[in-house]
Length: 405
Ligand code: GLA
Image (cartoon, rainbow, N blue to C red; front, side, top):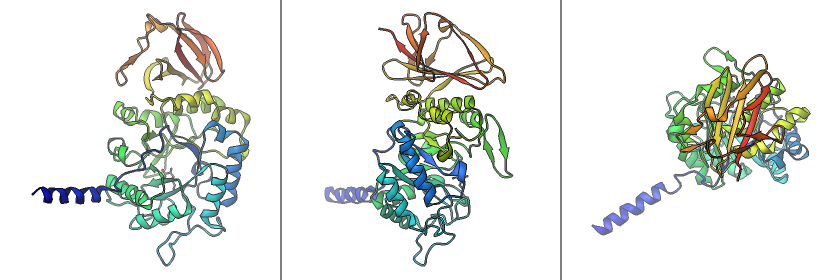
């Protein structure tokens, strides 16, 4: 009987071995660039090389950006006679491995896109029925990141489909950050923690402050729509090292005002979203670059406590979001959603700021906190007095609060 049990145990271990994701990746929210928001399927080898060069030249690598991800449109319309995916020979005349090698030579990592369905969202071959074959191919090219979409999936089960691809990647043996993109349709925050490293929580983002643009069967969402659609405690709870809620690739530098871009960036950081740039880095303005490389803001995203912000208050259309940081510090954003500048007179003692999830609260009664403005990079007083300032249209005040010893 004991022998039988031992055999059964061995069988179950060998069946489950390999059934896991790569555990050490994405300990902080992944940072990088993705081609989709600006280029859609109009991508090519030269673009990737240029972007990799810009990561270095513009100080983006230095600020923590690491992954360069080619989204939909990198493939030929058909697989080859062996069923392998083929890079579009016009866009990538030297194949994908050549661009991966170039990206690696800069000390950066490389990502690709595919889809759980028969076809990708732009109609290229999806991985359905080819998961293990595709995973091996990616590993042979040196791919470090896979964004895996959800078009043309019929009645496939999302969790099972993503597990299949996770296992295929694991078996191929090369650590790949697995980015789940089923738009929050099947509540990935409930099951994807041990499947992928990040998961989209909404449909596609679009470069506007608060709009919703319909496309028939689906819609794209402006910044505040994305934030508000899934502002739920159970979603917030699901984030942590190795598994993040993905608020989608950023639209910073894609046409909103600088103030809106700052607010967008501040919110993605305070919410612990991955930070995937989505703009054309070959033509980036000084202001955009300043926003994207703001290391003090990025440090909030990377804080080791890894607790995403919660909405503390919306008073007079000023959004106040707070995030506990390590060593009893806090980050707080005040975002002005009004179409006029707004004066703030915020009495710290009148607002009991506390977080049920992390069981932390701001102890303004017995502690004074130093305030640092993370966009001005200046100390701006402390919590013993009211916070009195004004915030421009759609702009943000982002503060770090540090207890005074
Ligand atoms: C879906 C995804 C987008 C992008 C496109 C590519 O819409 O949500 O982020 O990858 O497909 O076709």
